[in-house]
Image (cartoon, rainbow, N blue to C red; front, side):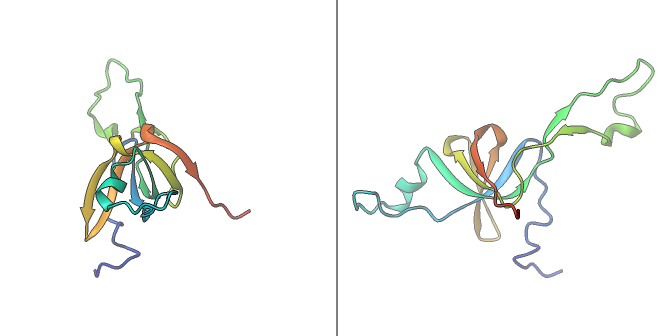
Length: 125
């Protein structure tokens, strides 16, 4: 299978309460007209980007009887509290909690849901 823009993130599985964010192009110029180098822009405390993938959410403990094995056949049937973030949302997040990765020449951040401050969702009404 050839890698294209549509399917390049298909094989990525985000774990738990994390989201994969592609950062938007940052502002190069301040309000006062100063041009900032890329290193300074990236160190700002709050960043924005688009949610590309979201994890399943927060795992919820399930009750097992005394005669049931925790690691038995139903171990894959884990329940999750879903995340608020959805693919396509614009996320405002704290940079200090983000982990930068490079995947197929693109820069992404893996961010825990707790570091996401705000989501902007474009929905068809």
